[in-house]
Length: 291
Image 1 (tube, one colour):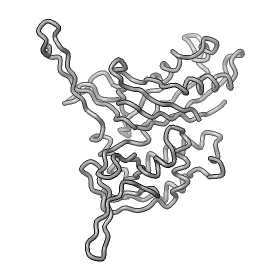
Image 2 (spheres, helix red, strand yellow; image 1 turned 180 degrees about the horizontal axis):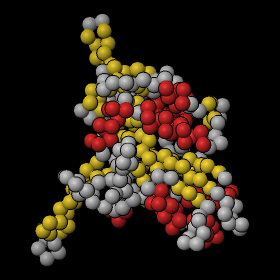
Image 3 (cartoon, one colour; image 1 turned 60 degrees about the vertical axis):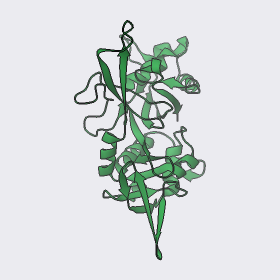
């Protein structure tokens, strides 16, 4: 059995929806019930990759008689892009999400990136943005705003309408950056510029308010105006969202080896893939990597 890590980066807005919703948003994105984290269901990922796979390993995805050799977990949101007053946008995450990522990383056989060790749970424990005004940033961050008042310099990070006035450098910058960049969908330089870690409380608020909402309508072909009751609102994960998940490969088919399956998946991910609904209007274009 082999455990691999899947990384996804949204190049266009992404809508993996629940089908219907309550309130203002007619078509919300799907979220975990317990955490509120947006997810891409494993069944969605499996279906997309299966549709483009070579016929020689199609059986490895399983059928109604035989379980598949490839098991996909849901991909959860790892880095949420949030508009920033400096640096255009921030990749925002929190201690809980990072702990979850490090736990998943430990299931793989990867121990280091080059000569650089990966982050451990102890490294994440040292991250302490424990209130609604604290943010931690990577070295080389473009998110910082500085204001001089007499002999004192005040630094802050402003995300949407949230002002974080207590800003601190990451105590374990290199290990965390190495671990996140290992996904292969963003570089260390990008992370150094845009990574921002906030408290779980602030992250929970942003997960509900920093997604993208778009109105859409259907035009009546006869009248040329919006058809009656044909206006709706869709929720989407914004461009630059980064997701992570697990792929478990268990050989159940004699004529398809683990390495053959891995090679085929890696080959597919050299090209862009489309996840979720609304693909005909450009939603869900992603870059993907299997590590």
